[in-house]
Amino acid sequence: MSGSWGCPHELNGLCTRVNNLPCDPGMKGCVLYGRFVFADDEKNTALRRKRAGSDGAAASQDAGTGDDAGE
Image (cartoon, rainbow, N blue to C red):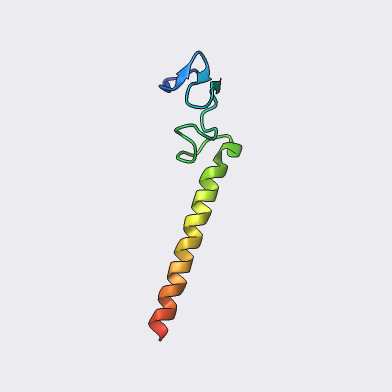
């Protein structure tokens, strides 16, 4: 991997954290997975699922609060 950031789990282009697979920042198992938005939208699936789940949970809590207030 090139650039100004270096992953401590990368050794000779392989990820020592994910079964010595070629380093691909944001792949499942990577320390960056689901924590950051990438330019490649295919790497953002975990983040989208995480956000969709939290939005749904917030909507459920709001709905529950409204029901309790009406009783």
